View 1: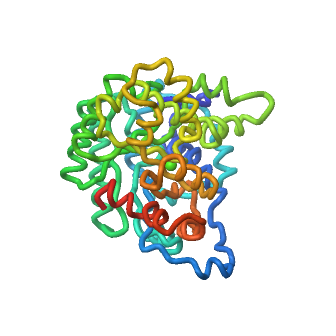
View 2: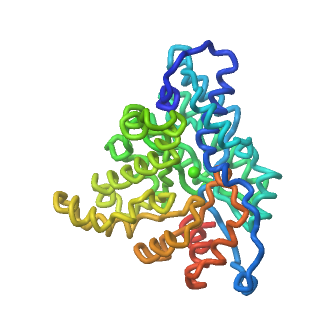
Length: 389
Ligand code: CA
């Protein structure tokens, strides 16, 4: 999240109320989907009345934050920035557009009410924006990740049939991160971990991070590779222009398009680095229908593949070791494409709550014209198998 702190460098100001403001602005940037909040349940057609209800719905990319942890992360980032925080006027503008709420802080009554209204039986929780993942002070990163994972485990224990979760890891110390993954799975009962974006612009295919992936394979748990704020100079080059408003540039660089490209490239980099030759049992999850990658596997094989000395085709690794989820992008065309390309065993459902709050989460899957067998796999069976739920 370092780059977020520096993303919109403008007039700096003194740090009164900054911690809360930065936390809110981080949350707001990721609340882009809130424009879709509270989509009304449409009147049922005759076909929908005949839909066979799915036995269970598990969604696996659903976010929470712990306010005290995020405040400590923001305080660290301000300290790293010489006690100053950039003017976040653009992010405030985004916030005004997307009407951020603090649903992300609730792992209780309000969330369960949404789940009940949306037909969701269980959410897999993961830390949203402002997590301690990228803190560069090793001791602080370890402490805050442990606190976060402990608190997540506590919240899950309060509603064990409704919630499960992924750990957050102190990646600045990959050995400690692997140990925290081990502790989170064996002692806390978490089901894997989420890695967000890059580690301060360093991709996770660097050899230094291998212990994290190695531990995931050893524990037989997946790592969820989630997008995050991209590097400032790349955002400036590709996504900002005098031809559109700065707030549109910020959206374009993040959830509008840019961080999906970034996250897809990060997955391709891992494959090209040979990680699945080193760790053939490693399982990774990629949201937003695979962050564009499934739609380009043939080209990756045909062109990039010519230059590599990997044991298998890029698409073979992808189809063997990757799982993908919609992250609330409920498009029937995309769903059918990924079933055709990857097979229904590799697709797991997700809604990206609360960045998207779609009360038709269950209805979308019950309504689409795919086989009942595929629906059951995507709705819950694949999640149960992958995550031991
Ligand atoms: Ca998400």
